[in-house]
Amino acid sequence: MGIRGRNPQQGMLDFPGGFVEFDETVEDALAREVYEELNLKISSATYLTSVPNDYLFENVLYKTTDLYFLCNIEDVTSLQTTDEVPGFSWEFPEDIDPQTLAFTSGRIAFQRLSEYLRAKDYSL
Image (spheres, rainbow, N blue to C red):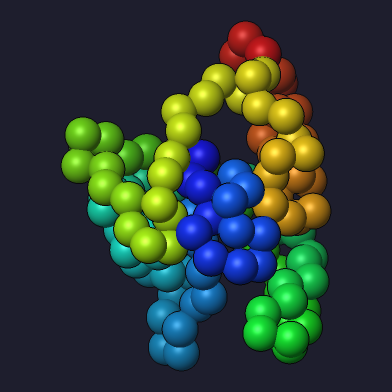
């Protein structure tokens, strides 16, 4: 999990992400954002869920739909933080308190991830 370096919700845990640019696929945006924020290259991604979100930024409320993916990473040793993500934490899902996640959409996605892992019989 990344630690947000900027408002909204600075200092809280969050999934890497951002906005899809014009003429960009969701998959390309996912790869770009993960690379920009964590210097990691995605080798594959599988859709998990989508969640509506209210994203307040600079006093403007954006109505977004947040998309969540399960990703395989080519080489985690290349991980580097940025000013957007000044820190990170490797955690087992069962050790994460959902209330430490920055956004309601992230908490909902985390719940769906936990359900997915239980259904796949991963230990939680």
